[in-house]
Length: 75
Image 1 (cartoon, rainbow, N blue to C red):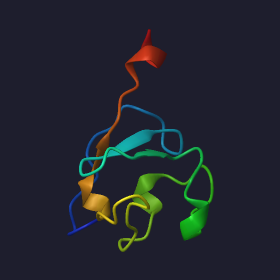
Image 2 (image 1 turned 180 degrees about the horizontal axis):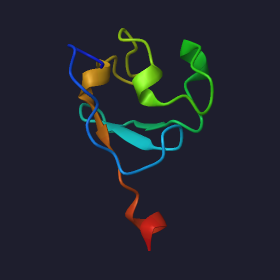
Image 3 (image 1 turned 90 degrees about the vertical axis):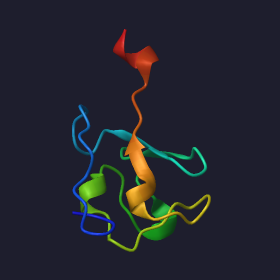
């Protein structure tokens, strides 16, 4: 659960290796990199982020993230 007790959107990637995009500003969250500025270790799945985590670019809440599917890597 994250945000306002909403379940994470479905994402076909492996936990800890997925990409998410902020719907507000377009910032890409790469789970492989984590968010060191917020104390999030590399490889941490989004579902394990604290509920009060915010986008480092615009401050949007975690509920504003949606799966980012890198089409180039799926070819």
